[in-house]
Length: 99
Image 1 (tube, rainbow, N blue to C red):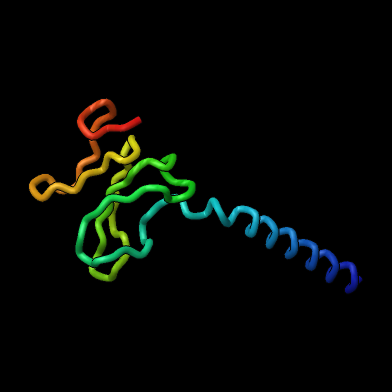
Image 2: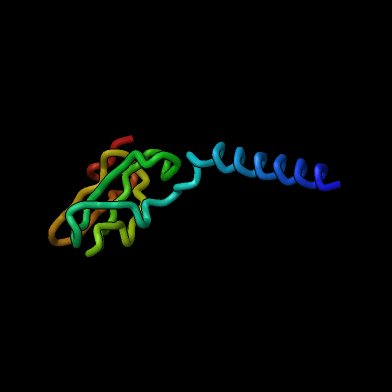
């Protein structure tokens, strides 16, 4: 009886671990909390696996060097940091937009 329970527990733990390892690449679906530099700035980025179809995203880098907020753009290579307006993600088809 003890052998059967131990075997069941071992198989269950192995199955759970394999699911966690297999899905690891899809766990990060948001840039929130990722490291950034320099602190207290705004910037644009792209290409975070599993996020926003490789389109740009604008983000704010907090005082601790992590992303504290973001805006997903609907285009690639289109995010612009402007001093007067902050970060701008152009509308698809508008100035700066590239399909």
